[in-house]
Image (tube, rainbow, N blue to C red; front, side, top):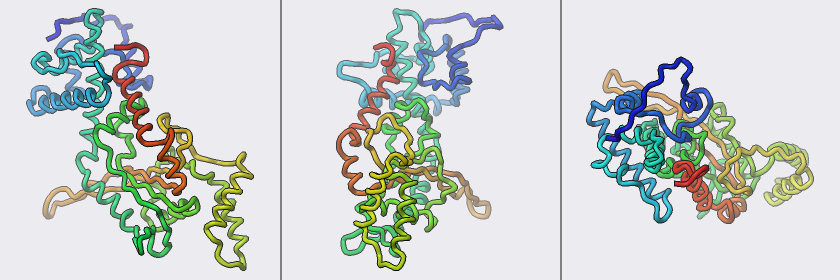
Amino acid sequence: MPQTSKPLSVSPFAFSRATLDCVVGGRSALDLARLEIFTREQARDFVQTYGYNLDDPAQVADLWATHGRALAMIREQLLDEGEEIPTELHDPTKLEDITDLLIHASRKDPATIHLQKWACALLKVMHVYVHLRNDLFSAFRDEIQQQILKPLEACIVTEDGKTFVSASERIEIERLEVKPFKTTASSVIKLLARPERVALTLLDKLGVRFVTKNIFDSFRVVRFLVESNIVSFPHIIPDQSSNTLFPLNLFMESMEELEHSQAGAGAISEAVIEEWLKRSLEEHSSRAEFKEKMNQFSGPDHRFIKFINRKLIAVPIGHGAIERSFRFFYPFEIQIMDEATWQKNLTGPTAHDQYKERQRRRARERVLGLSNETL
């Protein structure tokens, strides 16, 4: 057990700046440089409030398992060659009690500052794992996926080697990609990389991507999803919507112009529509109204329509005559883009691998405290 102690202040004017920063200052606990826990008793009380009963062997075992997952994740995802986690923190026989991590993370002695930084790193990753493993998706993954994805997949029709959205509207698409739910490692990296994120606000664990033939069809897919009641637009999360594909105001103006031009004429070809949209953007670019939600890890040319919808999920609970439904909203992401944009997004600074690497480097900096000082 770490032999360290600190008398509790009895001054009425003594406040913890770190605690106040987290509670009323909007700072994430993951960005604290150290904790202020100096005895096993303080540590046990802290863990009890955090949500774990250390008198319950099963809960203690769960914390040790989370410690093991955090170790593996840091080693596999965040460390550079030559970096190692100190034995005092990764070996359970050296780390006698799980609460010792909290005490190590509170040290100020220059002789043990190395352990302090690594203990903080481990606790940060453990914290994210705890939240991810105790959310609704972990408990009801199959029900959530089935109720969200089934209506989306049911609207897809394949004929003669071509894929369409809707048998009646026949909006041809190049592909429909069901976004696999984020792996735990991927979710941990995302939460560590973005200070404003917590597990509750991880909104893209599940989703789909429509790749259409052209820009016009991308907007047709949006209209179909709403009018066919696959998407309930009141459940859209407004501040999560993005449209960098084509400005909405110019699109609506073009649709009105095309409708008037069609009066008394035949159908307008897709090529004519796309040329009309292209010309509108070129002539009125100064008035273009895009809706861009900034993402520091995306490349500057990443173009798409994206929105987060919420689905009211119903899960049966109970048995027989007392069976009821547990109901809750769960978010899912829909991305839509045309084929040319999709191909462009696959290369250059917008490429997925490069996006993930930028995210990983930011998570590393945050976990290991590399923004201000090195280990």
